Image (cartoon, rainbow, N blue to C red; front, side, top):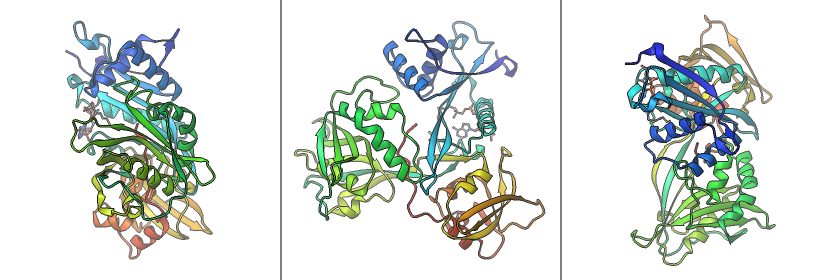
Length: 431
Ligand SMILES: CC(C)(COP(=O)(O)OP(=O)(O)OC[C@H]1O[C@@H](n2cnc3c(N)ncnc32)[C@H](O)[C@@H]1OP(=O)(O)O)[C@@H](O)C(=O)NCCC(=O)NCCS
């Protein structure tokens, strides 16, 4: 039997020794596959994945149980995994801020609900905060896990289907052109297109080498790092012939009714690139349906002749954001207008707990801690401030949901005037 005194937590970097993943790296990556109920990766796949983790500057946190003995897997393997790596988050106004990305969170069924996730995440967030990182972010397998650690729903994403038995004609003239390319070609073009889209999309998180390789068909997903043989790809060129969008896609096979094109990776810098790539895909003979993902305010239904051909089949949370350094986060943001608001913030991890005053004068924000006895205009949890911060959810919405408490007349209007954004935030990255 194990108890908490036999638990050991270790932070380490993934490692390749003479091109072969180190045993601790293999054990860690294998434990992640097990934790997500995925098939076992073979030696080549483990080597690729270790290389990608190294390229991303990932730090692993592994928990071992010293009491575990053979034949238990945990005699060698971690009972819990957790990984984090640096990236950037577009907070609007062209501002890309460092973000601490969290992934690969698993706890073995033999050790669940004993506080291992809590230990790993609180330690890791404290380390990130100490290092001066302003935000942490993740995508969640379940919506009920991370709110307690101060993560709020910051961006949403839609899954859609598009009926294309009559193609996908657009209401507007085309502005650029689409060229069919071998998926491999995207290794060259995708990085710059990802970077340009990231720079101009509020809520976007920087792409990784994994994303580029997936777009190019080098691997299917984290649970299958084998080349994808039936992938197709297209590039969009703007009116000057400069690439400003790409898409890779798969045919479902003839057995699926109706025959369907599934979009894998798609990244576009402009609305023209998105609608024209979709029109191209809709023009494939014999195909009657497209499936894909996109923003909740997708341009497609508005751009298409047949708006009803587009159907959002699911809309859900995507990026969960944690503000680690409230003062820097609020100061760095751009605001819709000048104003002043005093907020009471609740933070279960204590990082932003207290009263804060935000003042915006001539578009420049300043933030200071206010005395504990000051009268706040509104109070909310740090997780809900994350929802407000990127503009994905309004103060009126949060107040109606009861998670933003209003103490002074006009506080909702002041918050919404300050935090309003020109666009709805969208993050396409999966991690
Ligand atoms: C989710 C998972 C990592 C939780 O690990 P754990 O070590 O059991 O979690 P802890 O014991 O540290 O729990 C911490 C808190 O979260 C809560 N919690 C944990 N998992 C939860 C879940 N799936 N749903 C709701 N609450 C959850 C616990 O009740 C506890 O609450 P409290 O501290 O406020 O009382 C684990 O269940 C798991 O590996 N799941 C499968 C893989 C997965 O979904 N990973 C997440 C990827 S984003």
